[in-house]
Length: 400
Ligand SMILES: *Cc1c(COP(=O)(O)O)cnc(C)c1O
Image (tube, rainbow, N blue to C red):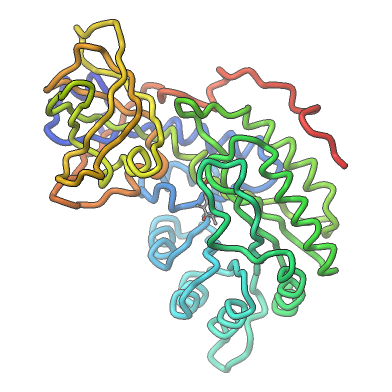
């Protein structure tokens, strides 16, 4: 496989007519090793953030053994690529057919749920040929927690609340030797407190249920770095989670899990686009809302950018982007700071697109084809390259 040094050399070599995704396997491997070494438990990779086969191999080779999958297609994909991976089906609303295939054909044992109906569905779908219930189910009850510290909410759709959780935990306890609690604080949690409030709620649910808990899964939500979204050091999140986990009324050998998506793959990819037209402070580029820039358009997410031409002005100006489709919604407000004299034919690299970037691509309007190449330079920002001073974690929050 040919490895380019960086985006400039990709442009020089290919003068690409279509957007190009640049992948940095070394950055994804570094993120994985960081979680494996420093998270005080087991990190699962949330496959939906970026299901690229190459990335899945990179994470596996770096030591990620468990994968959070949410659909039967993700189960089949990961099982096909990584025969020995442990797959955890963490979508709380599954079809009976998906559960059946996952359990009987792909060795999935861990399932999440947030209702008694889902529990019954899982128990039914996992019976053996004689109708006997499965003895090896590993169930995780999903709690609803607040998304108030996160940039993207996951609070309204899934999770049972504190009035339902104790009964559901008691019911789930009847169906396996291993019972967990899971939650998701929302994506890009900008403060470790997100996990404090969620673990407080977990404690209340467990105390009321009075059952033995074998696993706590604090979900995803671990941040990456974007313009205007500079989170505290990841070690602070880990330290606070460890402290609050230790204080839970759970089995002495209970496991701690997390399911990062964004934090493991945001640094993996950037995107090279070309400016096709300039209209004042608006640039018409060749990828957008229906391509790898979904979040830039739909939730106004800002990404770091840099112009790739050699002789462009030093002075920067704020631009908005239009994507290539004919839809007015294919618009990205930014602002994106680029050289004041940028114009048609110039290439731009957009960074930090490994998570929820390429994964969101559609073929709408005939656009969205993107070539992928490997590059060896650093991502535009990193939480894992040692460049970020570690603030004092130990007096950020006190344990009640
Ligand atoms: C989306 C999702 C994740 C990953 O979330 P990030 O914010 O990308 O870390 C983890 N677990 C579940 C259940 C999810 O739905």
